[in-house]
Image (cartoon, rainbow, N blue to C red; front, side, top):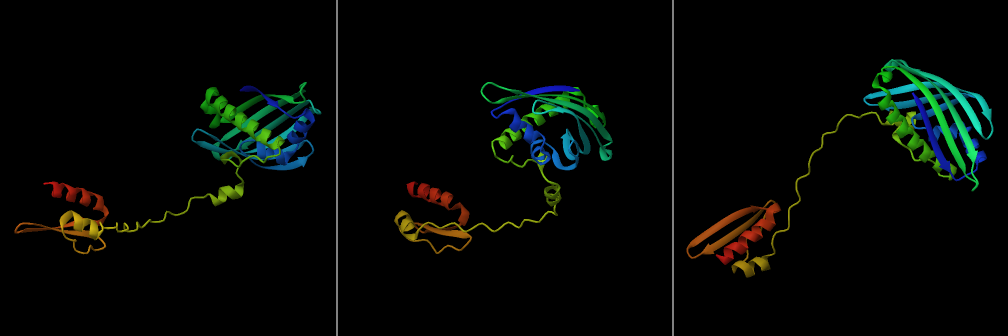
Length: 239
């Protein structure tokens, strides 16, 4: 798989170069990179977490800078594997920095990567879609870093400690609280409507007594249906 991407930055090449060669800065910019170990000035071991479809791989990626011309060109090679998902990869990347007349930088990268094992079975289209998303996130993080803002934490850049704390915990049984009793219609309102005040309602029901001639009706409405009770009373008065 071969990928070529470009990015326009509003800072000079030297400033971009310093960030690119700072392992900790790149750890916060590259999606999926959780930590990086500095072996020497041109050799690093990165621990990455990459999810493609339903498979999550955690690669230990050994990267070495094999050629550089500051602050314009860099070429690096890397290999990595995750035995848990029976997958491995090799990659060669080139970075080109070109100064613009306005003082900014045109950043261009070329990456050639080969993925083997279970991840390699997803096909070129899936892999390129994933690569496009990672590039977009990298560009956003790099611009934030160059502007002096730390990239926001995402699933791809979470620390191992954050992952440990995110382990699922036993589900807790939720006990619903009983519904709060609704305020009953005020006696003076019902007195005006029916000619008399209703009996004092309990915490769960509204007690309504209606007299028509020699007929007396007593109705218990659920307290949480006070609105429906009022509507019924209005219709009763109209009848």
